[in-house]
Image (cartoon, rainbow, N blue to C red; front, side, top):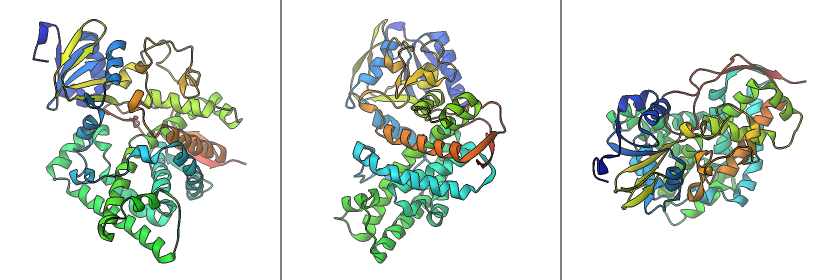
Length: 425
């Protein structure tokens, strides 16, 4: 697509607006230029699409035509060491099949019991900070072994993962400048630290003769052709990418589900009464409203994009983009507020009528649907149910707003959401 092709493609400029308020900036550009426009930002040309037909096209491209993987890689590689991506053998699709997810459920329950015990009978916590710690415990217990979820190893692993956190590249984009300026020194130290802890967990199992048929054992089997030291490193790096992917969204989704229940006492009462399906629908609704993902496809070969008004020829190198926070709340009447009735199970209710289903997204669509969807919803339901059944929760906030500057993932909160808790009778 040559510059100014056809003289009809408007070009909206402004890196600063995207950094300060990505959602608001793209909404304003849409008001000015319509549903299809260009944004030149950060060395990338973004072809932004918001019409039903344009978004359907975006989700319909094959990976070899317009790549989701390469676009995502370009976002997170700014924050994490490049060598972390070399030699990977275990993908999220290996991790989150139906049978594997069933196996993780006991781990989730056990990890949640450890967290409840750590909280004690009363106190207070900030919801997103607590859910971040909880997300570490749920994730590490599932794929790094229950040892990793114990206090002994959590104390070592959590600070390391927090310093390495790839989601910072889109939650706080400006911080990637510091990462670049320092040559990712802190991130490499954290990666090496995690490699040592994972090696210690495995060595202790071998020393004690412990055999567990869990994902950590599966990882070690997949690298059994390597020398012991290199095997430890490659297993740890598979774990790092999987856990960072989980932490980019899971803990924030748990947090928003809990926040929305506390702000809607009638819905919380239905959950405590055991009404089937309500908590799952709250989770999907919370993710829908919390989404700040910019969905990208990096064009690899010349393709056509039909936005419903005209067809554009798009050249390699262009990023086709849409932002879920723009469409998720505007695609149909009533979607601008929280209401679990918007969902029936994991699907939008029949009352929510859309020109195309892709206009609203929680876990993606088509071949790029998140493979962790079933695991994530199970984790949210188990975690939130345990908290609301165990504790009386008194919110010290009256509203919660998403972080304005975030461009990617499920939103973090703009301000702290503090809760007082005490054990229920």
